[in-house]
Image (cartoon, rainbow, N blue to C red; front, side, top):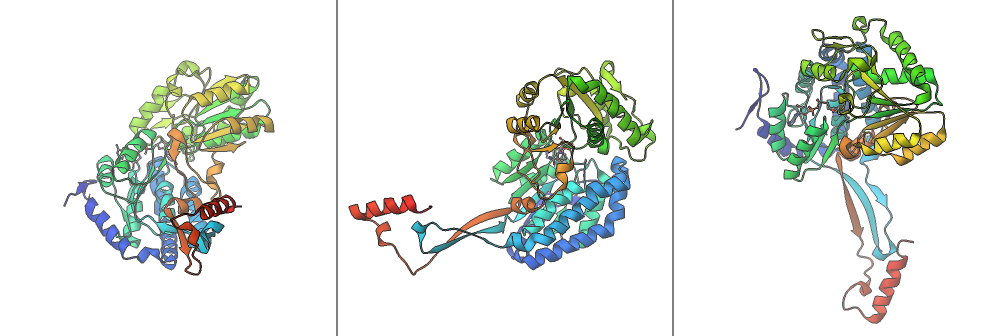
Length: 471
Ligand code: NAD
């Protein structure tokens, strides 16, 4: 049997794990909604038991303070679990739909079937939330799941593995730790659904692997999310909300405002206000703030540092390689040719570009890959409507940043280069369910005219029936 070494002490027999899950799924154990509810409750209590270890692991991996760790990962997931437990009975019920007269006598309904054995591949930036969040949908929909957390956040990955090993049988939920070799070994297997979160480049590789088995996918990818600031805005709140959204997790957030498009009239005032807000949130020296994160790895530290052009820096700019610290940094006078505008920044560096007319902004955004998030700050409803109406993005948040991700009622996902599919709340359940269409015909009625040979009269009646059948 082929095995893959994830680290020096552990190997994962990937084909065996998948085969065991398939055999378990085929027993039908996961089909029962009471079973799913019991397992989701078990997951909830496991997370509560492991809360401290999870928060500590996040601190070690990302220098994440416990409050943010709870807010953005543990608490976020517990909320998602509560929402799922509240509605799972309703979501799993077959949905009756009308049956056109043409088909009388019959009833029609849609049944949510689990796909079967699913794979969840997660990134390192919100390593707990992005491993366990999709899992809630997979479990609620009655699937088994293999989770592959990111090797770049090894402490959180280890806690996730320990928690699931302690509480769940790997034939139902398994964790395969490791990096690219483990991910590739998993992708060589046939899964019934793949849920991938990570970069667009790797997302394309995952899509190719999935295509070999015709496996459906959700791809939660990244990109450059623009943030537009109109001259008619609430300056203080705008600055505060941009700074918060950009600097949480030291900018390593898939939906962080990547760059600003600011109306010329208020650019200087906004930069000054953002400088003030950075200081208010992280003190004069953010390197000493307990709440300011660090860059995940040396590779990313070097990559982000290389995007910082010292001639264009107007706020911040200090770095410390030893500590992987990058000061909150604002760059001005940036244009599309600057390296900082060539890739997703994924760090605490905020380039500012200006505009005179909202049309320029729309043209600029539409010339670039479709972003995961788009932010617009304005008091002018016409401007807001125009931006929403004339651009395409995974989601939009008006007059704030990141907050649209924090509700189970809005599906979260990308479009175009920023991804395929969406999840959160009911959308997670739907993502992991095959919608099976069922028409149940009765023996009480049998329309003779539907069968050949067609007489002229039957043909005419059929045409009339078809015409009026859906009215
Ligand atoms: P990544 O694509 O490098 O890695 C993600 C996962 O894929 C990891 O588990 C990794 O082990 C695996 N992987 C890496 N290379 C692989 C390969 N060649 N073949 C198979 N598997 C491979 O992404 P990352 O650096 O961990 O995360 C950062 C990116 O993720 C950013 O672009 C960010 O915007 C995006 N992201 C998106 C969302 C979202 O919800 N849309 C959330 C978080 C992060």
